[in-house]
Length: 291
Length: 244
Image (cartoon, rainbow over all chains, first blue to last red; front, side, top):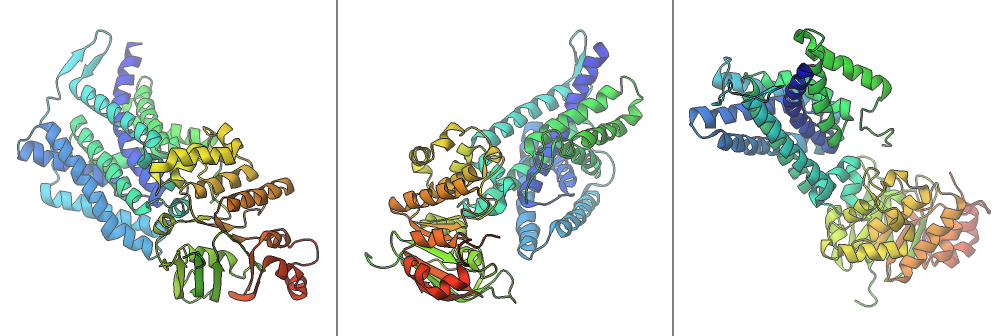
């Protein structure tokens, strides 16, 4: 029981990071039909922005996190203006956009490598402090990661459910063309999508940096799990991405109760395959969707 | 501007890709409060004409004027704000949104009057009110069309463009759609409608257009077109109004 609870806490922490990354990836895919392979590197970049503000400039971590969120939201907007919108206007399809995003991923990763080198960076936080709650121990960084993620994920969920912008985002993901003819200002919604998706990526990068350390490939290594989370929950469904991310984190950590932790990432993908065998459209995916 | 037509499309030339013109000089005029029906064989450019009027098809030539304002090539959300709505033939509701949310999406340019308009739509379509918290994907074909029309009516447009509203519906639902169109028109909305049920649609029409090859083939009052032996023979195909 104790180890189960302990692994649950660990799983919630890593699942939170997957979920934050997955929601942004899923929204951008659903609305712009862009499978953004650079999303993981957006996260890394967010972590490094926080590192610069927090360690190089010595500002508090909260300020650093806010700077990272803002910076990556702006990065998202810039890529939209410079790459994605011009390419869509020229008729680029899913495949062309995907290849571009892979290229962008390499560019960002190598710029980070060029700027900060390959050695690990640490944010200024006490990662040894833990609280003993009797049956389980929870570290300070787990508390921070889980609570920030919980607040943000609930806020994003409420936003998508009840605000006009959130509903418009869901409308665009259902049908971009219909949203356009309904009179929705789709360009504005796309802007908000990048702000939200980029901002969440930046935050996920900071949390990943708090959780372990930062390396130029931190986000890229997380990206595989994030894709799994998106697929697990149902492609294009932001609520599914949330559920998929948390579920993936939990399953990976629970598996360490029986199997050596080396395999925990593989276990996550075994579960993904099993789920897709029975629910090909993911846990919260639609049964069918007409073009 | 009492007698000036609400909507005038003149000499439209264009298509989805630059090299292929689907519209080759067609025109359409809708007077205030009229029902205008466009018929013609498959591939005549009917849908393209309506899409071009709504700014969805690039035009090489021609103008579209709405209430005297040139809206040629404007983005749809701008045209919508100027008082024209469009209901596509298929994929005309947001399946994963609830009925209420679908209606909200129609009110992008009229948020202030949204609640009032929503009540008006529920009064027009009581069945939608019953199911307002359900997702649109669970609706029947006829209900879906109702929702699509209601969504388009949310901004209180003066002109409503309908692309084959009765396509694929059961005969009973077809009748309901035509009744709805008349009801909406009676409230003062100008209707421009493409229809495959050519006879039934022309019977309602103040003005009818027969399109072929992206050009106007016949133009006249709905009743006159119905009586025209050439139109009847070529486009109304005996009694079984040409369904696909």
